[in-house]
Amino acid sequence: MGVNMKTYGVIMAGGGGTRFWPLSRQELPKQLLNLTGKDLMVNETIDRLEGNVEKEDIFIVTNVAQAELMLEATSGRVREDHILAEPAARNTAACVGYAAMEILTKYGDGIMCVLPSDHYIKKADVYKSVIADAVKIAEETEALVTIGIQPTFPSTGYGYIRHGEEKTGAGYYTVRHFVEKPNLQKAREYLLSGEYLWNSGMFIWKASVIMSYLEKLLPDVYECLQKIGAAMGTETERDVIQKIYPEIPKISIDYGIMERAEKVLVLEGDFGWSDVGSWDALEALYDKDEYGNITYGEQVHIDTHDCIIYAKNKLVTTIGLDNIVVVETEDAVLVCDKNRAQEVKKIVEALEDCNKRQYL
Image (cartoon, rainbow, N blue to C red; front, side):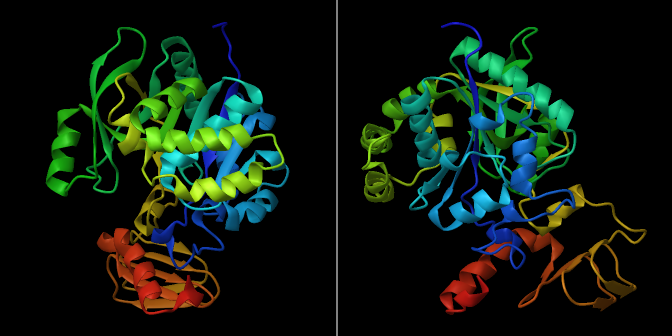
């Protein structure tokens, strides 16, 4: 293979961000929110690829319900035919495979930078150089490359990667194994051992390499993708995707491929990363006031400490609260213990169960 294959950005933007309810909804998922005060999360993700990926080589994989919204929100950053709309949510193996098939069929092999659409990164320059290194390694080694984040606290909200030996001077490690979200005791052990990194969900590989792993490890997924690939560029493309895609087995790329592939490498990233996975993660984005509170919007507080209070429309006032999350939107209010912010998605499930879908 010649040097300098084309590099593509593949942004996974199909999720609902249920742990950010009531701000994120099915119609307005987390990737379409402006949480930093700069821009929508998906646009920040696109803009961070500058220098590594040309604008016309960026793809967004989203769901049919959000495709129109995504095109509008990204305002000219991404080609319309590069917004790939999934007719059904089939988890990340399908999402990655769909994008890989699109690239291979229409453009030939290239390096894919597969990125979540709704993460926060403080140091964009450091991030860009890590991505550039990862692209180079993926091109030279035929490996599946992922980016692990140096943990700064014993998080129970992230999966972990246990790394093996560092390749001398190359700046990357082999991967021993991937670990699911741990309990607090385990998370503390991981942090102390120095052998574990947070799993950022960012992947860099050749389209041909991930496709051969799909064929080998997830043949059922691969078979569906082959049928879709055969229809790409023909009049029946949309109809075939509509028919076949919902039949793809639901499995994550981590579980289906990364945990089982033989050649996985991890690069360490230290660029102020957060997956902004739940309300308590706003602590990575905003400065606290003198009482340890993070506040947004109109508010007055008395004797209130270590709270996160997000007021979108109305004045929010509090007395004597500690360690509480309060979120006010036009039609819903959330009040929860900050230590249980990860559980907000249970509220979303409860709303579905008691038929209050108008609030989703």
